[in-house]
Length: 108
Picture 1 (cartoon, rainbow, N blue to C red):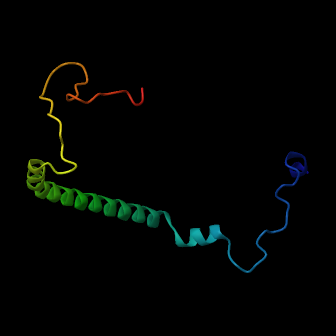
Picture 2 (cartoon, rainbow, N blue to C red; picture 1 turned 90 degrees about the vertical axis):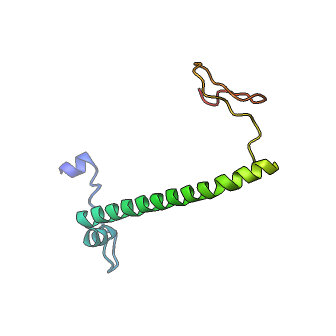
């Protein structure tokens, strides 16, 4: 009677899975254990870490090769070369930009 008055017998209904197939939750519980999940997470972290190290090494090698090519390209005035005079190191408490450029707040 408590179920009738509390929830209107919400749990008293026919079984939703009338096929011979197992429930999805039972399949997941049978295949995936807590240790298996931790192992998969550790393996995923290892793969991501190795990928980032490889990407950093590739970027470093490309930067080294690109520094000599970039110097040659900028000497020739190639498209995409930096065309402004760099700002020297300074101490003012303000944003300093090269001549011909301006700055604006994008998100306050």
